[in-house]
Length: 347
Image 1: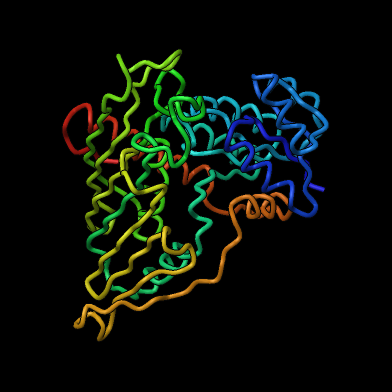
Image 2: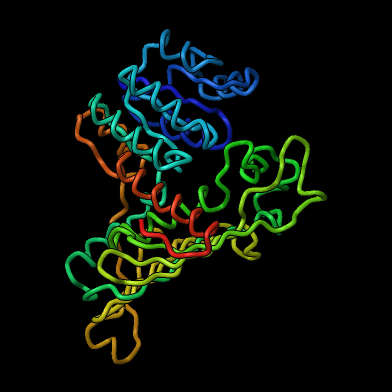
């Protein structure tokens, strides 16, 4: 039996709770949240026997093998480092940290301690991106030359996810004082992983960030609404390919769209997870001359939660690990520096 604790019992905490509660040979034996009422509700929902409001108390008293770190962004590094020090395996939400220095420290600590460590880039659940990775590595579209990607949400301009003005789990994501790195750190991090996983590491970035007015004096209760809500990135990849990536919370008509197009000198691949997580489109061979696309289907992949538990059970480290999370964090830091200086930044 793999015994798990969920640390942070907000919206994403329930996603983790639902995932582990249906797995054979896995039990959520503890939950932790600084909000006593929130952790109590979570425990009742998933029949969790032990609850804590202190991470240190939980690590000292609960008999657990692994933790899911589902705190706000600012809590990822200190909570994960405490769990690693206690010898626990860790699945941490994204972004891995709020700085590359902290993310690197986390990756190094996990390696020294020998614990399984993974960052929840949840769109790796889509088998289409794994198939694209293999196709590109096998030369199916030649050398990648241009990449275009977008992650689009609309919860600032519509109520498809609910009214953000009445939902603290949305509001903290708009406030740097509450640990948010804005849309770049929240969902741009997924886009950076999604685009660079099949193409290769980024080596240079130019980025523009913007925070649009959304409430009188940009304040709602305890939340200063100062985190970026739109990001535009120009990326150069290690093989020389160029990319344009953008993400925003203002994309009316898009509940949660993730799409990436990769153009090579001998073909192209496009993925749109709104359409399917298990299918991609490819244009190559004779179809290049007719601008005709063919659908390629991929076998559904285990999700991140299943892969994490399998790694804990077998001792075989799966991807994406903390080192990958730190690599993406380094790009995010470069994006903030680029926006501040107005210049391209080497990663």
